Length: 104
Image 1 (tube, helix red, strand yellow):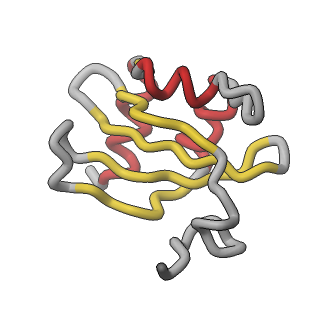
Image 2: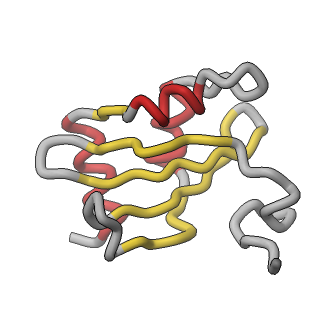
């Protein structure tokens, strides 16, 4: 099974959010809902892959929800999908497509 399908299969089982992810989602200037996170997971795309992450193979996903860009870092586990962080990408750090990091 390819990685995107593994992510989506894990999400169908259960989605668990880290405290950090919930804090970011509830930031006053972002207020990202669980519906929006699910939208990114099931419709979005992987833009960065982190196979050697200390939390296990994870990735950065990008998607649009309610006409705004959202990034989700997640890691599929055997019985759930771990949401590590969620945020709206900053134009200062990302190109206009919100998929490509700006060069430093």
